[in-house]
Length: 172
Image 1 (tube, rainbow, N blue to C red):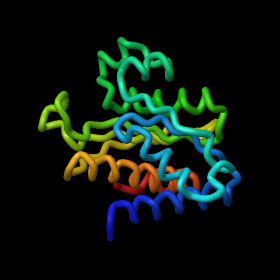
Image 2: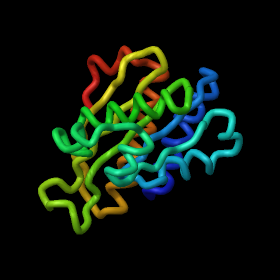
Image 3: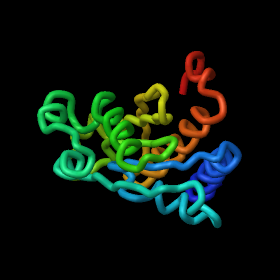
């Protein structure tokens, strides 16, 4: 099975959960650079369940668009539980949507140390609810890590929508 098929399948699972629950999703993307938004909008009728995606790839955009303080990024790093949870919270506030998904990580490149490649944080926030976050360590090429991040983000958000109580006992 190709990563594109798996990503599309995971996006459809989340889309179905959003349609069933009547909820609208907003996304704050860093590592995926718009991939999550692209995969959701490939689904016909997605305008009913998708507010949009804020692609905040740089630290400066996280600060300017999402209002994350420079000191917070400096203290914890852009790829941290603290920052990804703020990304999810602030995307939800900006969009006034029902649920938000935020992703940040290292896919590999000039600025990423080899020991950090594949480190990803994902957070999901329900309006008037808890922020759920989890750290992942993916392997593979830059493209594969980005796709794995999107897939896991879709599955994580779908679980939060359908059965958030499972997250207390579930390991990823």
